[in-house]
Length: 165
Image (tube, rainbow, N blue to C red; front, side, top):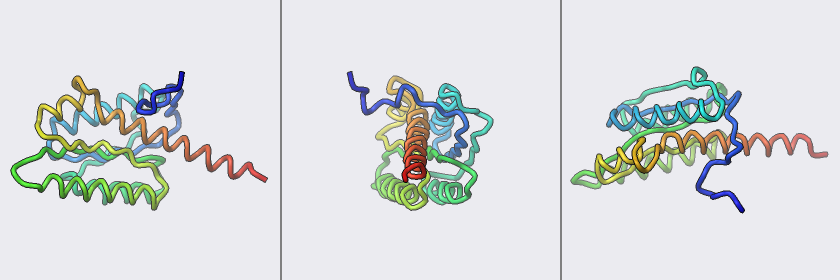
C-alpha cells in the first residue's frame, strides 16, 4: 500500500542534519508550543536537539529576513519558520500571511535550502491551540519533518548527479 503523501516518510532520519528554527515571539503561547513540537520531532527522528539553532524574531513578518540570513550562511542544512497569525477585525493577517508565505517560498527556491512552513493562519486562538500540540497535531513538528525530508531528497539528487558519468 502506498504511503500517505501527507505524512512524513516513515524511514526519515535527521541524524547529522543541521537545522535552524526561526520563531516569532508574537502569540508566544502558540509559537513556543510549535517550537517544542519541532524540537521533539527532531529528536524523534534521531537528530540532535542541541544542534538546532533557534532564533527568535518579533513577529511573523520578520521570519523571512532571519530565515534568509540563515539559509545563506552555509551553516545550516534546513530552516523551519514558526509563527501564528490569528484573524482579527481587518485583513491585516491575510496581508502578512501572503507576504510571509511568498517570501519564504522564494527564499527556499533561490537559496536551495529547504524552509519548513510552520506559520499558522487561523481564525481563533482555539484553532491555533488545536494545531500547536492539540487535537490537530503540531504543525511545528510537521514543518520540521518536511524540511528534513526535503533536505534528504535534495541530498540524494546532488549525490546522484555527482555519481553520474
